[in-house]
Length: 110
Image 1 (cartoon, rainbow, N blue to C red):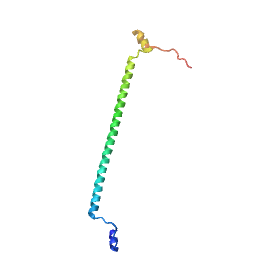
Image 2 (image 1 turned 60 degrees about the vertical axis):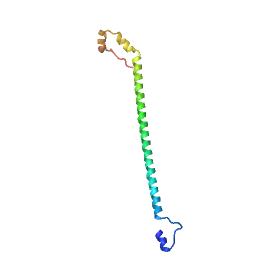
Image 3 (image 1 turned 90 degrees about the horizontal axis):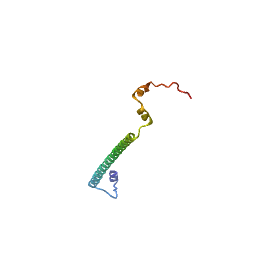
Image 4 (image 1 turned 180 degrees about the horizontal axis):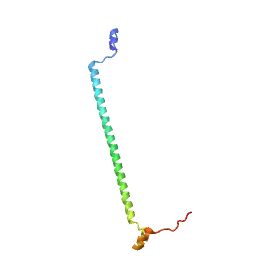
C-alpha cells in the first residue's frame, strides 16, 4: 500500500521506521514466548496437583477399607459362638462321625 501511495504522490499522516517496527515485532515475539512458557508451567503444575490429589484419595480410601476390614475381623473374633457352634461342641466324637449319614425321612411340601 505504501508503494501505491508513493506512486501517486501521497503520504500517510504517520510513518514508522523499519528499525522501530523490527524492535516492536521482536519485543512482542519475546513477550509471546515468555507468556506461553508461563502457561505451560501452570498447566504442568495443575496436572501434577490433580495427580497428587488423586493418589492421596486412593491411599486414603485404601487405608479406610483396610481399617474397616480389621475392625470387622476384630468384631467377628470377639463375638460369641453361635447356636450351631454350641450344638457341635456338645456332640461326642461318635455322634459327630454320624452327622454326615443323618437322613431326613420325608421333606414336607407346602
